[in-house]
Length: 213
Image (cartoon, rainbow, N blue to C red):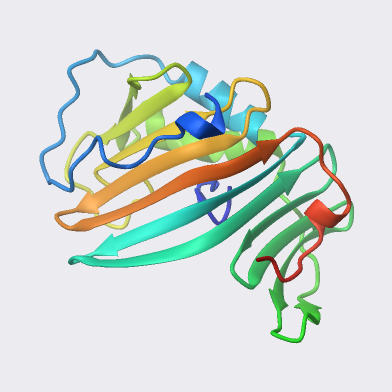
């Protein structure tokens, strides 16, 4: 789930982009049951930590459904060993050796960024997810229907959780990138992401906040 996707799950979510989870397998219902058994969260945590490393550049679509109304936004994520960008529309979160900063891209193409703050490490981000799926957390982890996919299901009714009643998240086996996820918040309320392109070759242009078509 990345900050805009899964964190905005980053933020952020393992298979090819053309196979990305399409958000249609799980209907928006308040009763979500898996036919599979709960698994230890280690594999999910490993995949999540790897997704925060790269290198990859990925583009996709985030779709939010609320009471029958659908809103779509374009998303661009790119990562290398020491640089990253998570951009949705004209808002971006940029990470480099100086830290992490939020940026806004104007219609003119000019970019304004806030002062950098310390960026969390992949291990620190892993710890945040571990608190959700570990002992005393709010969600159990189940294997997904496809290789590289995981499903998080809330142990009890939860409100305000990033992972909702259920989240399915999938990772690319080659790059580690999140290629798709769907979060069910409640009846007629869901958020999904699907990748439309993915590459392991990252250029400086991929890492710049800018207007994208």
